[in-house]
Amino acid sequence: MTEQHIIEELATIITPYTEEKSALENIGAHTDFIKDLKINSANLVDIVLDIEEKFNITIDNDSMSKMLTVKATIDVIESKLQENAG
Amino acid sequence: MLGNDIVDLNLAKIQSNWRRKNYLSKIFTEDEQQLILSAENPDVLVWVLWSMKESAYKIYNRKTNERLFNPLAFQCIILVLNNNVAKGLVKYNTLKILTSSELKPGFIHTIATDGILFSKKIKIWSNQYHLNYPAIFNEQITDYHIYKNIHNLPEVKNFHNNLLHDVSVSHHGNYVCIVFNDEPVH
Image (cartoon, rainbow over all chains, first blue to last red; front, top):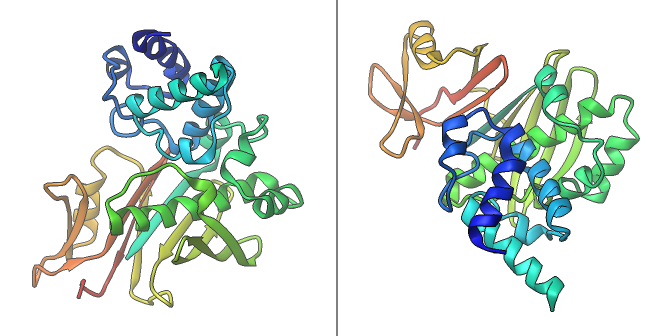
């Protein structure tokens, strides 16, 4: 799965949790969930759960603690997908 | 240092479904989940514990400049709980934070301090949320001035002597709260 593909999936997952439509349209690796997309921190949990379901992975607490940007989230998804494959 | 967190309960009801599978276990310890599930009003306890963690995290973030999303590691102990208030302690590694929460039908508001006691000098200003809330604060609280510093963090200064005061700002839904210490930063 390419980085661009993961970003597209993330954008779909994030849509219901943000009202910052222009930040969402311009989503990229450096987008910050809280600073740019103004996502409520209680909804970050929903995003983590949605990612687990969508990508069929389990995100441990240490990984979750880093998931404040799109880049960090891609890294977590990629490493979990690799663990699953290996 | 001070932290504070407000939860608009009407918005939380729409925004978050904490009964969703695996939601609680991602952010609450076994003990905290037990407290929630055995509570008379679980909806209230979820947001009391959440605002305790958030307000404590705000102190951690200000102290270390480190950002993280690790609510599970901010462990809550509730010492006093009734229909109007909750008092407790949040532990994160070696950091110990005291919290005091106000429980109202429309909102839950928690103040946190890393002091050994809650100072009587802590002032709370709350208002219905408007984009221009700093201007409203500055108009109403004539001795103090709130503004954002070059790092985009809120600061409060005493008009008369220009001394800085600890401050924490929280906004959710219809509410905005500014908590500051009447005593200047040493």
